[in-house]
Image (cartoon, rainbow, N blue to C red; front, side):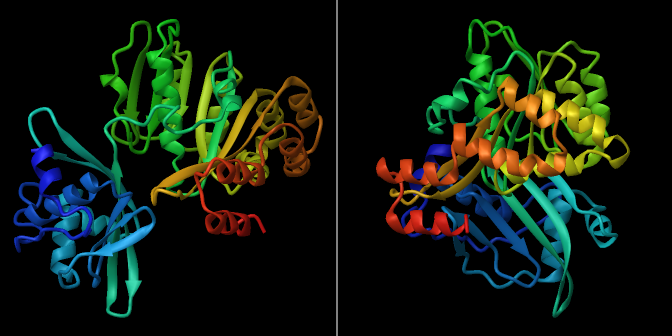
Length: 386
């Protein structure tokens, strides 16, 4: 079915072959148009699909949006879509102020399926309360690191004996894809002998399908397998892992537990939202709970091994590539950070990136010289630095 759909899809026109069926016939059982539209977008290579109350659905492909030809979604249609993607209590939970995260799977055949990361939230419109559903298309397996054009300095540093590796960036910047590529490389290394535990909300790439000669991975969905990241991290410490992956550090408890894992003889890998390496350092410090901040920031300084900040830009082939700012933390730099107030971390990191890391300006120049981006895209990327 995958080949048939791909061949019959009018890829060049970006036009969904709508057959007129309802978005949802019976929630949790039959959603012909919903599945058709999401399958079309996924096979096209779209980054995501969007369903919003009182608006026409659209998908995003290489940062450009393409709307379908249908009428805007009404209240009943949105309620049915929410119930199908999440469950009967989805609308009530949204109206109660809770945002919802779930994985949605479309089976193409007995052996083939498409996976989607779904986030739903309520919103206010001129016509009353509504719903915003943001759906990210998830590839079955991440691109390998050489396909992601990962820099040699990162390749030399992302597998420290122990310590903390942070990948930061904005929403949709490819953080999870980069970490999944790193994890794939570990699993495929015959000399690796890794015991990898991952917790994420939700799990994007299911890597247990990767055949590994010497390593293993166990992935846990938060909150389905563990109610919180803190509960997941507490469990990992009893299972003798070599590597602990935390999908995202977005609150104090998670950051604190991740730092503790990193100074306990493990490799800890996580993501956080930040615009560059200096602001990543600031976010690490700010997320440390105030009552323990001094102790935790010193521990973080001692644990840090690599910070990568990533942004996606359009490439010369009309697709997207990653630009990266990064910094490898050697012993003298870790000592300087641990002896300095965390208020000074952004300045210290900025100086260190310029001296021995890679700035965004250097990444832009390199991509431009290699012909991977145009002068216009380089100019826009530089504007983001101002």
